[in-house]
Image (cartoon, rainbow, N blue to C red; front, side):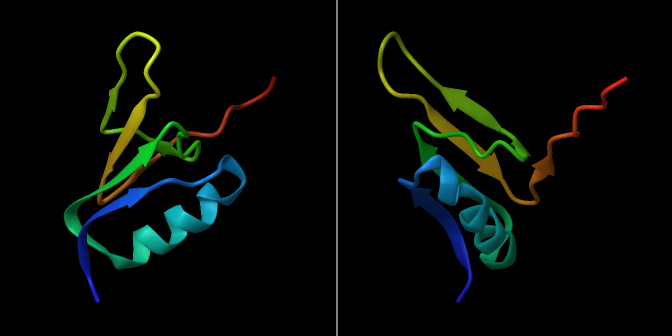
Length: 72
């Protein structure tokens, strides 16, 4: 089944598995939304944060993968 939006309430240690699954199952233009924890391997489409409230991270398919840090 293909999905247009997935809302996650994941822990950081399981986020990479959620990203892998969403990469396979979300249709182009669909969103993955995460409460509080970022998907560190992805660039967010948007981040909603206000004051002390927990942030909401929004990613849009096709995902943009973060560039790895290059050490010198």
